[in-house]
Length: 207
Image 1 (cartoon, one colour):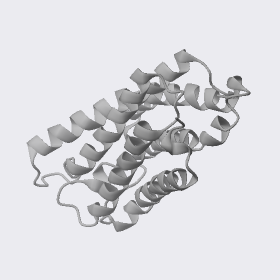
Image 2 (tube, helix red, strand yellow):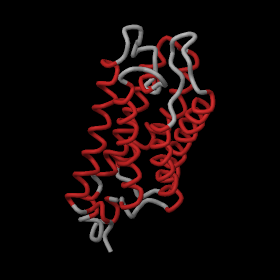
Image 3 (cartoon, one colour):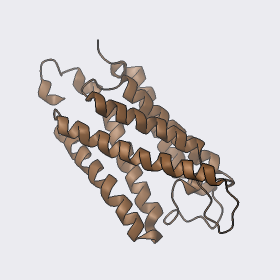
């Protein structure tokens, strides 16, 4: 049976959640206090504890997680099962990241250390789930040229960008947003794969 993601309405809805998520995270800095710097402060900090307007970034995380969870459950049948579970984990962890917020950037701001620790754990685990999930699918083969480019870019970004963030703290926000952009592009491409599945029976190499 063809996966549910091959239904046009499902694909449109999944892509819609992804697009709304990206829009929410793009606009979120506009709701932040004046001392928030999107070049230096992360998306997590735009969803931080006790910050006015943090609801929009949290909504962005939630929608992203819902889209990926849906995709993992009903998406391309060509995903290896371990990769499917890893992407499902990414989606669930993204939802958890929306629920557990990090501390605010302002020195001395009150925060819940347990919630901050949970956010740190879910965000870190989420990054590993994405990188390993993409790499697993890459190793399994049967990817088109466009998918291969996105796969390799995603794996490199998942490794290189966190290192660059540690080395360049003044650009942490910009670098992290670049990593999010790669993830959005990767999952968006996977949502669109059903157009190729329609030709997969006669041209298996297209998958």
